[in-house]
Image 1 (spheres, helix red, strand yellow):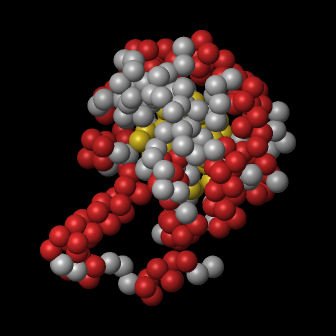
Image 2 (cartoon, helix red, strand yellow):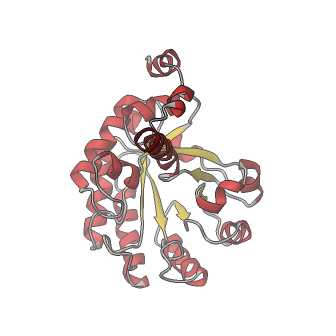
Length: 272
């Protein structure tokens, strides 16, 4: 199981100031393409996975579905896979701990757990959020192999609390045994740098929204250790579908379909 999980390999990628790109995939094909194109690690995306099931983001995929999806990606690629596991699929610390154990059994090298009481955007109270990470961390340390637990403070992105509160939560997560910290879209790159400077732990940054204007070198200078994509790449593919569909159905225009990647190129990337 340890070799399959690749937890030690995954942990070694996390270097402050030398960020790797954690490429969020949404199905076997996208995972294989990204790995073939150079991704050092793959992650699931809760939103992008939900889209493949015809569901909206935030709390509409079950733990069993997420685990089965993760197993598919683990089996498809030869790099570590991490799970975007929302709030751990339950409110209690015990549920978060069980989710860690099940994620490891599914072959994942790590998971992230956020502090949002899904499907609402309401955050858990700080003490409960910290206790949830403490339980998840204890479960991770009891596993037979290495496992990277990422603790997320999502309230800034969701408009539920300010950066000071998010930083206080990160401090509690660090004390509770988290391996990596994450405040999605904290405001500015200067805010991101302040987050990185506040901890000795590796910090994840999200390349989405206004942060797509920054390069990997910018993130490195800010002290970031890992850059994830969230659902941004999946949403980019959906933009192509949206634009092409509007052209076709409104104007009878198929021009956008002539700009796709060749079948031979895709076939080559998907070949084992």
